Image (cartoon, rainbow, N blue to C red; front, side, top):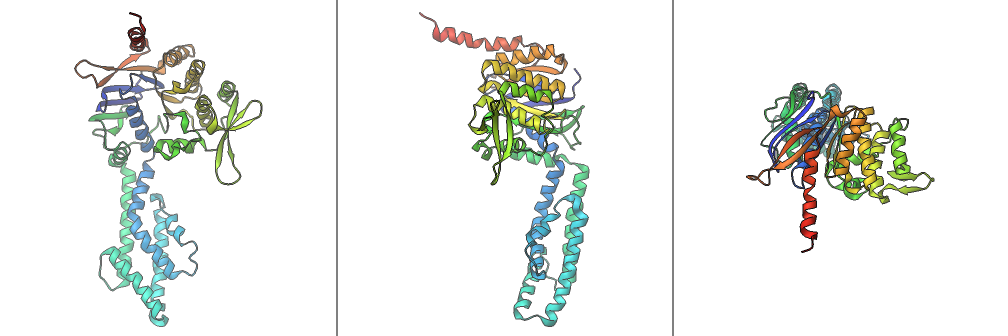
Length: 429
């Protein structure tokens, strides 16, 4: 198999070692606590923020600009009669790519302030003079410069802004890894693998020794589903990837998926379809429209309906594309055995017909065997890989992920331990 995306991890929570290829449909299996969710989150945050490098630079830029923006708003309020839009003017140009517009506006604002100085000196009353001097003092304290010459103060102020933008432009061009690493440290609570790397076409973009983050090609968008209860639930107030998924599900700006046969396939399974509608007051609302025309709040529907609704909504709004990685943690947990097979079939068909990539963690014999044999029938087994987390006698709480290729027998052997437990606990004396 040609290795397009490779994840290599050593000593990460319960994961002792894992070398995993993501070429299409990747399935990992193992007992609870073997690190499957840890790998899922590492993949999610790495791809999510590597594809948002510009956004990370802009966030850093805005942090640097914030203390100056406060002063600029003070100057605006002092010099402009109409202050109704003051708060939005300075924040309008807050992207590194808008350097020229931002600095042009600041230059105009400073010119106005210098004219205002002449007015204050000639005609200003005591209150106006005190208010003007207050702003000048704020500028001095911001720059930590006691100069009396306002022209020189404003020149330094402008130069500082220009330097901040130039630094951000250089960072955007160089795409240094430390930006991504900072975000990963934050979201993973500063617990990163001892040694790790994610590569695309043999070029690293995250992990130990990475210097720069290239523009990704194979995977440009990523979603993470660890519970269908996210649909219409308060859980959106929890983990940030719940919030991100909720935003994706409520996105009704596209409507390109309804003509895809897969959309109808999901509708047939659900005996209806999921819809996004405005409630007429404030927010968009997720609903389930049953085939008999009755409409229900999707948050109140069965978890199986929610599971398929997530796929249908992401398909409908165009999120599921050939450059999408969908990470799904135990999709079988809330499904009837028949729907487990249906869900596995949708995973295979979404990959075959659209090119969606999957990273699936599963405990289910039905899910694993269905993915294996349906993929073979649909002739996409070459992009399928299974991994089994195995412990060792000398390190019972550390797991090594074994590459099984297409062979799922070792997974089933590990599942057979449950029958041993039934015999142990259920056998008559």
